Structure formats: structure tokens, C-alpha cells
Amino acid sequence: MDNGANTISGSGFYLHTKGFNFFDVYMLTGVIHYIFDIYCTVQKHENRPVLYIKSKSKKIFVELIRPYTHYILFYKLK
Image (cartoon, rainbow, N blue to C red; front, side, top):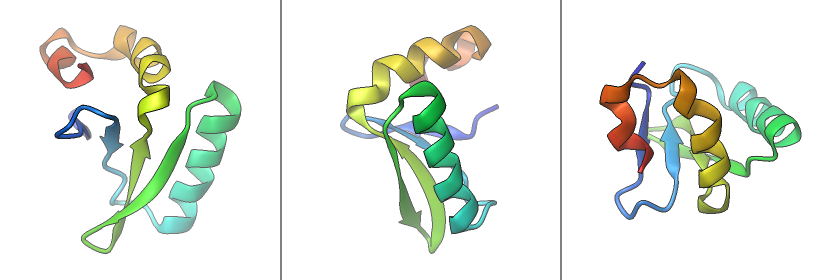
């Protein structure tokens, strides 16, 4: 359940998709944007893909996942 992180500055979120290849993560960003209107990009961390939720979509993302997040992990949604 703990596969993401807030940025240090609090501007967005990282979803650690390092187990997938770049093509699949790019496809995922397209689907997330198309279905949920969430703006995200793919960044390279340790030569593996990480999905980044941009700050302008932070509120939409938090509202979407909060009902499925354990209360102990709410601190990550700030």
C-alpha cells in the first residue's frame, strides 16, 4: 500500500512505478489524464520510470484516492 510519496516541497506526488517499463508508464499517464483529468508526467529515477502527479492535479488526486487510503497513511496526502 505504501508505493508513493509526497514531494519534499509538497508540490505533487510520486507513484513509484519502477517495476514497470517506460512504455507502460507512459501509457498509464495517458489513461489517467483521459479518464480522471489528472496531469502527470514520467520521470526517471535510478534509470527506472516514476509517475509524477503535478501540483495542479493534486486536489483531484487526493479526493479520488482518499476513500481507499488507510488512515495511517493520510499524512502522505498533505
